[in-house]
Image (cartoon, rainbow, N blue to C red; front, side, top):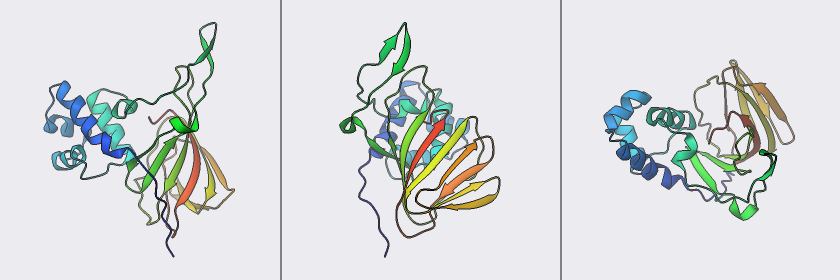
Length: 199
């Protein structure tokens, strides 16, 4: 029997925020489409909340608009950063301040830590719904770590697929083309830590 989790998200805010930034820059949908390599029709559907957008495509849109990926989401509350001679020592993020958001069809990303300048890791919980939906394998700078809490995860690295179960982990240099997906029947939950930050 297929099990899907009822996971709240704030993906509905991505489209309107994208439209707001685009219009504030005086850009047409065609201009953003040309810069991002995505179609005008698809971007229009995303802005209206009719289509979800893959994380890799959202990166392309952010680049086309000249903003960070984080700028496409609402600001998150966080406790004050603790500083020592101007350097960030640590941040604290309370459970009630940790929003969940959907940025890709069938994937829910929950950020586990507040942002702080000078800190480069981005820890997340990733909920991957069943169905085998996957993004194209792509390389990028940085490193990536995944630890499966529940369910099963297919992780493809340099064309080779690896099945991970609860307690299994994978750590890689992200310069190797990679992607992950859930071809099982239950929602998979993964602790993911990446550099550089996605959001």
